[in-house]
Amino acid sequence: MNILIVATNHYSSPVPVMPVGACMAAEAAERAGHRVRVLDLMFEQNSLNTLALELNASNPDFIGLSVRNIDNNDMQNPVSFFKDLKPLMNTIRSKTPAPVILGGAAVSVMPEELLRYTGADWAVLGDGEVVFPKLLSALSLGEIPDKLSGIAWLEDDIFIKNTGPVDRFSNGGLFPNFHRWINVYAYLSRLSTVPIQTKLGCHFKCIYCTYRKIEGHDYRLCDPEAVIDAIQTLVTAGLHDIEFVDNVFNSPYDHALTICEGLARSQSGARFQSLELNPLFIDDTLLTAMELAGFIGIGITVESASDIVLDGLQKGFTAKDVYHAAQVIKRHHLPCLWIFMLGGPGESAVTVRETLRFAEQCIRPEDVAFFNIGIRVYPETELEQKAREEGVLATSPYGMLEPVFYFSPALDLNWLTETMRQTMAAHMNYINSNTLGLSFLPAINRLGYRLGVKSPLWRHTRFIRRGLRTLGMDV
Image 1 (cartoon, rainbow, N blue to C red):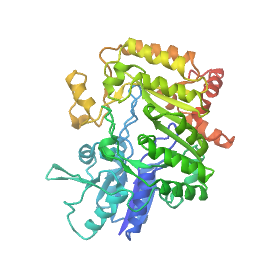
Image 2: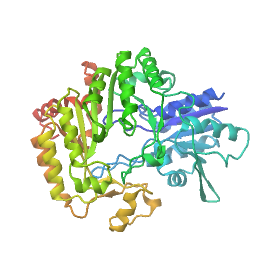
Image 3: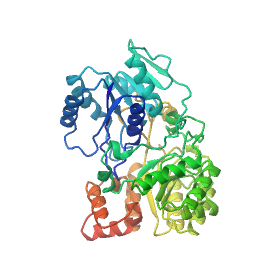
Image 4: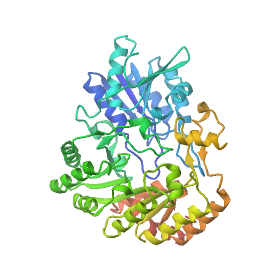
């Protein structure tokens, strides 16, 4: 069969993200015997025209739409990405009756809502490189795949979802041949990294998070030696900047440590990042192994330095753990991005000041602190239930494609906005969602690449902000 997979994401801030899921699904479908093309819309100026031309040229039997995000998770400057899907679907329907299959992280989060919104025929729920070829095989034979795990559809306007175990990593595939499917240089020239996962699943119970819905509750670990071999293959292909995109890289601790120690022995020459570290599992042994492995930047998602807020978010760690992680990091040379989320359950002016006090006292001037305000609420999370109980959320689940946010009733938004404006002005190593949304940030990325600046660009936040301030820009 002729298969066309469309990577629909074209949001490039702070850097474009390679469509690893779409490429892996394409490669798996090709291994299953299909003829596959990937249309990446990231850098297309006229997506609808490009799609129409591709449909005419490839005449696909089935079309996959890969949807990465529903929106930008920014309460202050919300942008809805799902709205791009309807014009794409209209273009498809005007050219071909081929069935359309939705996939990607966004689809796993809100499959029913996206099926109804787009009018697509099927949805793949996570692990697309495993499920997608099986779905294609059944459909190409004229079968109804109602027993296949990991898919969803509408039947007589009733939403049906098949859940069940899917054996990811069974074929050892950790990444696709990116050069085969996308314009790799276009990504690298904008300081993009190559994403790779060492595990799936999450046993943490943060009340706002969708990872457990996307990947499951239980860990599915990839063999550390397979990870090391995969990275060597990437380096051989000229891809040196690699980012571990596990939802929490350093849990389980022993798994992460084994990988880092193996990478240190292999001396692959790669430059590694991971922006999803948990403070519970930060110690000198792990950070030393990461330094020896070739890590050039880490991020710690702490959200808050207040026990009241951490407990309300059910983060599973305390402010004491956050302070301990900061002390460990000070003993090492790895640049660190600290990630905070203000406005969660229990947040007040007092707890905000606790977090800002921690940031000022414990974060090194050469490191960076990112502050986000408000929390995106998704259906079937504990945060949705809490928001409804508190009267913060009244929208029905079907209306939650449009971004809705939780913001603590005990906190004044105007006060927080002004407090953060003053705090940002006093600390050149602080950034927020407005920083990531700067229209000229992609140009800065391209300029940095030409000047030989290496990823991650956030390491240079102080100098960039000061330089832009000198030019009269309020950033």
